[in-house]
Length: 214
Image (tube, rainbow, N blue to C red; front, side, top):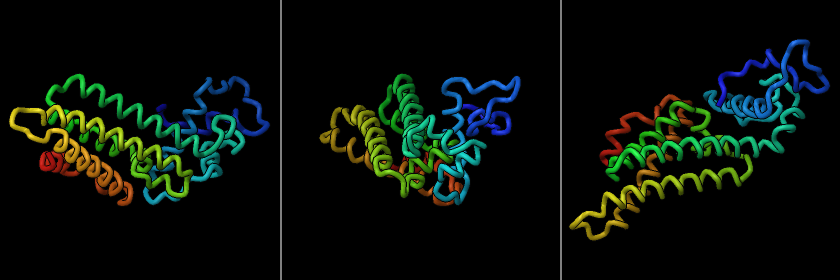
C-alpha cells in the first residue's frame, strides 16, 4: 500500500471543488489506495471505535460522496483490505513453500510469518482477528473465516508431508490436528494483540510456542 497520505496536498475530491492551479488530480486508482491506507491507519489506533465513513472522509479531507465514487459501500472498503491481506500472506506462503522443503519447518515459518505480518500491520491485525468487523456486514467475517480455513489447509499440507514418514500410522490425522492447533494459536495471538491495544505482541515467545505445538 502507498506511503502516508497528507490530505492537505490534494483536495480534488471535495464536492464541487476544482483542482488548484498546478495541482494534479490523483492518478487512476491512487485515490482508492489513499482511502484504504487511511482506513488501515484509523484501525490501528489503540482503542479505536468503529470507523464511520464520515470520520474516514474527514481524515482524508474529502466528502463522503467522494468515497462512494471509489467504493460502493464501507463493506467494499473492508473487502479490499481483506484482498490485500490474502494476497500478501498467501503470496509469502508461496515463497516459503518454494524455499523450504521440510514440511514441519515450512509450517513453523508460515505461522511465524503470519504473526509478524499482523504485528507490523496493526490495522490489518484487527481485521484478521475480526475485532474491526464487529457490527459490519456479516460477509466480511465469513471471508476472514474462509481465510483462516485456507491458512489451515496450507499448514495441513505441509504437516502431512512431514508426517508421511515410515512408522507413522496416522499421518493425515496427525497433520489435521496440528494444523488446527496452529491456526487457533494464530487467531488467538492476533485477537490478544488487537484487544490489548497492540501492547501484547503476537510474536512474543512465538518460536518457542510453535516448537512446543509441533
